[in-house]
Length: 144
Ligand code: 8DG
Ligand code: MG
Ligand code: MG
Image 1 (cartoon, rainbow, N blue to C red):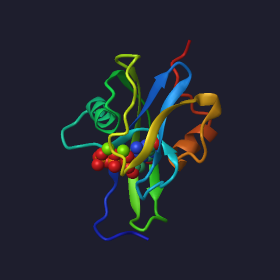
Image 2 (tube, rainbow, N blue to C red; image 1 turned 90 degrees about the horizontal axis):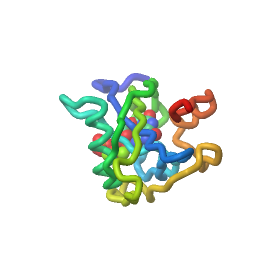
Image 3 (cartoon, rainbow, N blue to C red; image 1 turned 60 degrees about the vertical axis):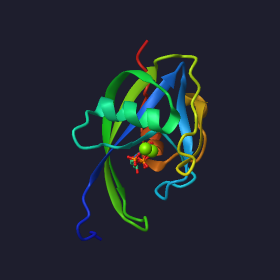
Image 4 (cartoon, protein in one colour; image 1 turned 30 degrees about the vertical axis):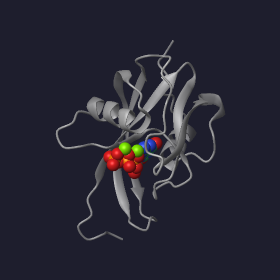
C-alpha cells in the first residue's frame, strides 16, 4: 500500500571495521527496534556519502573515522512499520582514525550502546537489511 506523499529516503551506514570485528548497536528507534545495526543515519542535503558516514559516526558514537569508502547499496522496504518507509541504504566501510578511541553512546534514546562484534560471531537478531546481506554472503572486510 502506497502512502500518500511518502518518498524513498537515503540512509548511509558504516561498517566500522577493526581486525575481524565491526561496531554494532541495538536499536531503540521504531524501525528495527531491539535489533543490532550499524551506526548511520539520513543523508542530508548537499552531503557526500563519506561526509554523511563521518558525521553520523561522530554524532552517534563520538568516533573519528578514516578511509571511508563505498561498499554497496541496497533497496529496503519497511512496509509493515506503523509508518511505512522506503530506504535506499548506502553501506560504507571505514576504520578508526585513532585505534585507541572508544565508542560512546551519544544518542541513548536511539541505541542501547555500541560494541565490537566478531564477524564470525554476530549478535542476534540483526537489523534485517544487515541480516539479509550476511545471509547473502556479503563480506565487508578488505581483501588480504
Ligand atoms: P538521523 O536523524 O541521525 O539522520 O537519523 P538516524 O535516526 O540516525 O537514522 P537511522 O534509522 O539510524 O538510519 C537511517 C535509515 O537507514 C534506517 O532507518 C534504515 C536504513 N538502514 C538500513 N540498514 C541500517 C543499519 O544497519 N544501520 C542504520 N543506522 N541504518 C540502516 O537499511
Ligand atoms: Mg543519526
Ligand atoms: Mg542512526
